Length: 308
Image (cartoon, rainbow, N blue to C red; front, side):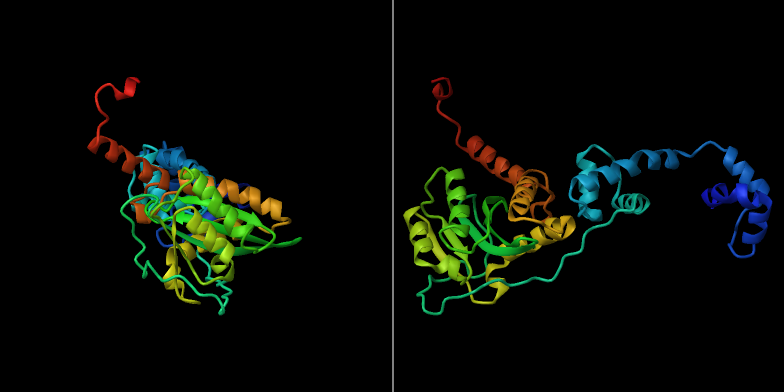
């Protein structure tokens, strides 16, 4: 209320504002109380709010403006601020920021009923004991002023890291999903021996040219049920978050190339900066680094090997 009086005192005067508001606002102060409040030094809480509210607004904007209370609280703690969840929520209200709401899922599967399909080796168990054991893949699309941009993601189930992706103006198997798979394979060292590659019954994933590429890399193909999002739930979740956090936040989109550049930035943020609730508020990069650090400590190198 002090702010309100400050904004209107030159027009109406302090006495008149207090006189009008006193019956309407319960516990509203007098003109004498107003002058005492204005002359009083700011409280410790007010000083802290003045410091933290801009920080909340900055960090929220740097993370695509999508974080809610839980992730903003975790992020503030990681930044060294000792604040609670309720305090974070209050500061977010003061900063005028809130979490983004997820949109309804859109299914893009186009199956080929004439193709003999691989078996379902996952059976809705989206867990893995280590990186490079199980990858899930899916395709989504983005409407642009120059036509549709199709986007393919390859996600590692263990760390939820997007290991491969591609944006193209076509759904053709040898262009859209295969280039995403080749990127993922290159990042993994070129061979995928023993890895399970799981996708839905989309024709671009069940095409012979794509299935042959999976086998050539040493991976084992797996497919879920047509039109059933639960059989490829993690890949569907990545698509949904991509649409929610990037596409609907930053649109409209003019060209496929614009979507490609924005996707590049978003994938980097997803892998290296975004906090994932399923990973105990860690990033995919941190989860993989922790795994390999544990492996090294459990299997130390022989004496002298590191100096060769």
